[in-house]
Image 1: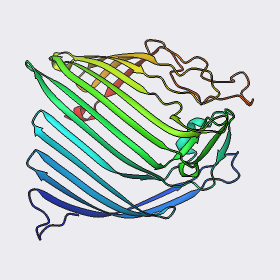
Image 2 (image 1 turned 90 degrees about the horizontal axis):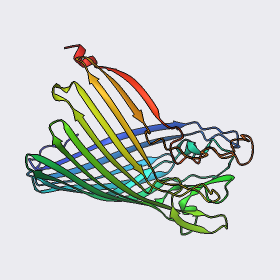
Image 3 (image 1 turned 180 degrees about the horizontal axis):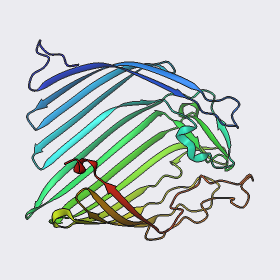
Image 4 (image 1 turned 60 degrees about the horizontal axis):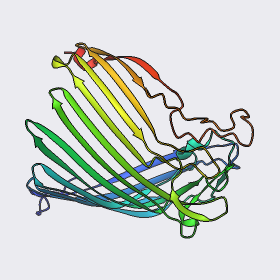
Length: 347
């Protein structure tokens, strides 16, 4: 709802408020758990938001919401976003705020289930809380008759509490516990990305992007020592270069994408390296008036992770683990598809 009158709303100011109600019910059962993780959560809330706009140069949005969870009690969530455009070709954006989440130990971490690891789960799962902030910028640079689009962003999330999935303590077990249950434990993530795009010729575009992620959390090593280190099975960087060409009258389209996946860290006790690998994908599309046919290929570099299933020769043994996948498990893949456009067929 918007409040009008009394000077609360004009060309530059707006104040809005509202109510919300969320209901969630989860049923999770595992044979290794003594009791099923069945639970319900009702979260009624109220929110208010103020926005200010100065011409096309500046806009500001500040808001706060208050919620009550039947599982975790009362919590407030403030947030602010700002956009500044000093010139038509340059835009700056920034944001800061809090974030809350009700974690689900099993469904959020289903990747760990296809293994013989023992599950050690904390009795009382706490609400995840985090402070996040970020800044981004975009440029539009004329190059003759064309325009180069550049964008960059950097975001940071600092967890006041998170549900840590510890794969390092024991290669035959997984420990799930609250960050606040481990004295001095930390959890945070930095993410930075840069992207460039340009139409070099009519219908022919190039796009390149690079992203760096530094996600770290405190886990306990095999010697029982708590250490802050990169999150296991997480890529440190990823790069993409893609080009696309569409013929005049949009009869054919050709797409090629090269992807570069960065190194990461395997959990303690695993000798298999988490190496970087490239991938190449391509697709050809033929358009008709109401439909299209496409032919493509994936993983044309044919990179595959060596031995993705540990202990495959003894599936019911203590060393079986199919959760340590950090790359493609299949090689070349060809596909053929057909797409039908319902909206065009009605014209």
